Length: 338
Image 1 (cartoon, rainbow, N blue to C red):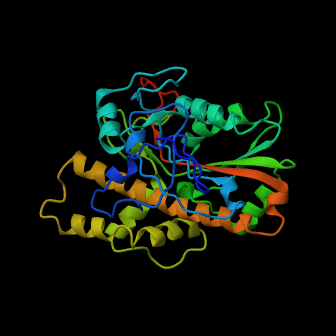
Image 2 (cartoon, rainbow, N blue to C red; image 1 turned 90 degrees about the vertical axis):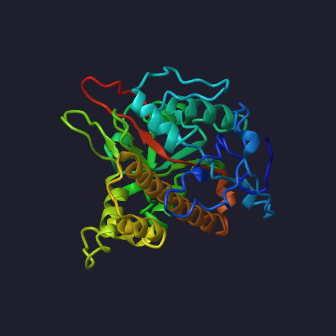
């Protein structure tokens, strides 16, 4: 399905699969607006499309581009393929198909983004790239989504990425940070912002765990989101800590969204039902993290866009939001692109 909106104008990858990750929590909000890339996927015809009418200026904000970013070898029947479709373990494949269906490798995402935005005159010399992904180093490798977009969309020698995110991918730079970012836009230029939470899937299929270079066993990914969930399972966070305000913010934002999940886990007669139940819980936490980040990102951008003179300096804004699924890295593992 291909629909042009007056707001949330298009989606590079509307996979329509986040709503399937319900777990014990409420399903993600149904007010996301998106359409498709030029390259058609199997699921586009099932995409729900909203048709809000807004001002001509707001129509120049396109987003969220509801993509799921992934390390998976899982491919849809599309024309754009990754540069290198890496094999992965059967357990990894099973988990990603089960909990993040329709996920695509970074290189495929970058190809689609670059192709679609080139038709809207996004060029390295007129585009600034912002990123609100987690601070975790696993999200900034040379084959990461962020680096792939930088290589495709930024000036090769001098182009960079403005980091908007903190723990969990939440855009903690706030009003001042967004103001600084937008003041760097090239004259009458374009803005591309990639954002969202991340979650690991280990080689043996555990959602929320990932192998890291130099470590001999998997560790947590994303530690901020899962740590917040664990705090809520224990009754909530403690008193304010001036050195941990980002994690406290995440706990506070997740608390009302995860009440049903926490209650179900705490009231279960058999809380240790195995890895599938744990995987579902972490997937639910991750989807709710996306909703939190998406709401903040849209509010920040739309607030900035309503300021006098904004559209005198900026010609268009594109939001690319989704979930980054990290694969394991290190000795004996496939590694490579997320």
